[in-house]
Length: 222
Picture 1 (tube, one colour):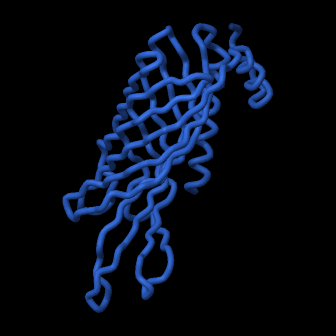
Picture 2 (cartoon, helix red, strand yellow):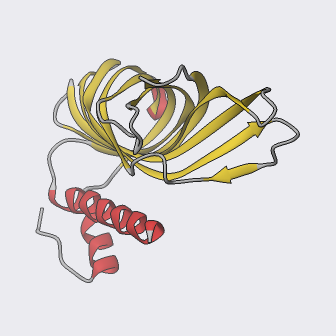
Picture 3 (cartoon, helix red, strand yellow):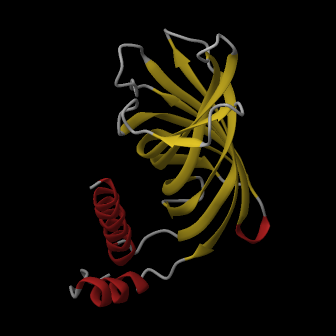
């Protein structure tokens, strides 16, 4: 059921993006690829969790409304997580590593050109939660989606540099505002991304052709 739900969201977002490409004739439009490391901290009123290093990778779509202003969205797979010590059956400390896999979708406003800042909300859809134990007496990895809620939401603030030939480097701070825990404790995500990106120009008229081929509908004329 979760996979069907995720696929419906992805198809809907693709449809909306293509619709924008077909309708908007003003400004430059660019699609791109983003990839980079992620550092995550999970706040808790129950325990002290350790910082974990993960990664983020996905696609970007940007519409430039002028030389110094644009709006952008991403669809990124992001590995977040945390670690902490638990006690086994004989009282020994065992390190438990939690991995949280999200589909993260921000809606960002961007100011600047060669040097730019970004700001806006994000939504994260939890795809999977797994636990790994660093102890020979506890085997392998366990999958569990019963501890954390499906949706994470918050604010993103970023600072980046636009390089030549469509390349860019951006640092983002993602501040979780929603409680992601299904338990009595309160958990919120705080993460940082260092994203390396490359973008390409989009021909506005191509959106009409893609819409017609994929959904058998005509986009409004541009």
